[in-house]
Image 1 (cartoon, rainbow, N blue to C red):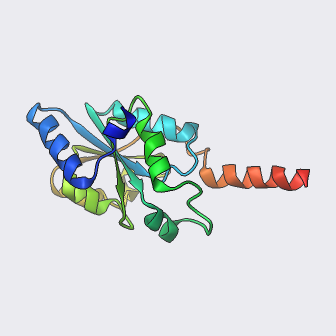
Image 2: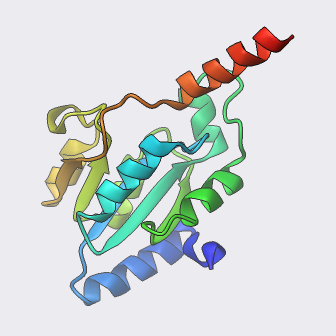
Length: 163
């Protein structure tokens, strides 16, 4: 079942069109999801509440190398996509190769583009594109006190204490 949720852009466009034909509201969330943690879960659950269908864009390995620290990603894109797809609140997942999620937004025109609480509506980089076609930007999830970067750092510190 999880594999059926992971689609390429053409497949995703087709299922989004089918859901739109049923007047269902499409929500897009995105992220790297390199080490899945409770902040990610709350973000995606909060995004799902905003509509009928939750699509999650996962940054590809190439995309992540351009935006994250050296040594990232820790998990390959296929594994990250599969973990996100396994979540009950997620309807579809796609891996995107671009530096930003903007091309995916332009391709899908989600009704809502959900971002985490490390943003405010006026600081979401893609807000102009979303608003250009009448979409909405929403901030969801709990306060940004969970981060993959901090989790990795803590694991390395603990490992260093043992050695």
